[in-house]
Length: 275
Image (tube, rainbow, N blue to C red; front, side):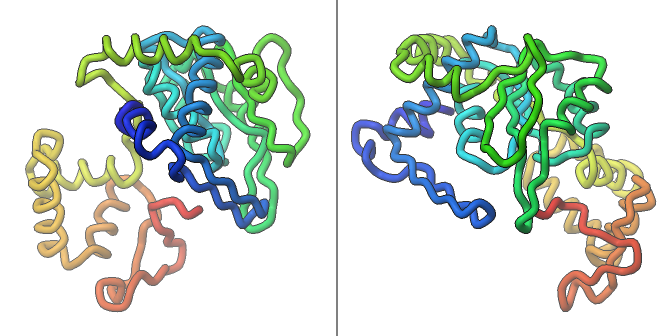
């Protein structure tokens, strides 16, 4: 995956933009060419290897939408680690459950994110989540964006900028990445995704109402089944009401949603996250 996304474009598109980062929150814009993206992924891979991450280990990424999050995901794939991406700003209790599910060797995080001009500190949430979780990661790789001061835990927290500097000209990750990639089977697990929320309620609807286990259906059949349920139940809003009854979630929409777009009723909310 990393080779197809980055390496194979180096010879012909090395100087072309590969990743464009634009943040209206912190007024930053940065463009990475394929050559620069390749170098950053290699450095991140070298950092993870230096922290003891090996093929098959899990790395949890708790980050805002910054370039380092992309570097971390591609670096994990490159060295054969399994990454689990958690929505930045998740509450400590929810994050703790993700940590226990993924059991990561390393967590990659940042000091804070920003939304609507307000700084959202991540480090206190992460520290509390690790305290609540039964599984304790060996290391936490911290990206300091300079948005919010934070205290480092001695022996656990590692500064990404300092570790990256040590691997600026390091080529070990290139050789390790290629060796690991050549040994990985096509079905080697790439990432770890949580099944909850809409997905969990969708499975409940399929089993209890449709009488079908959607897990055994191909993608198109799942879509057709969901469309069939939508029509039989009277549209998307009614289907969401059934999901709400199944999962206890407040997904209540107006029946006008099918014609004029979603309308929140009292206590209702979209099940998808807004950013």
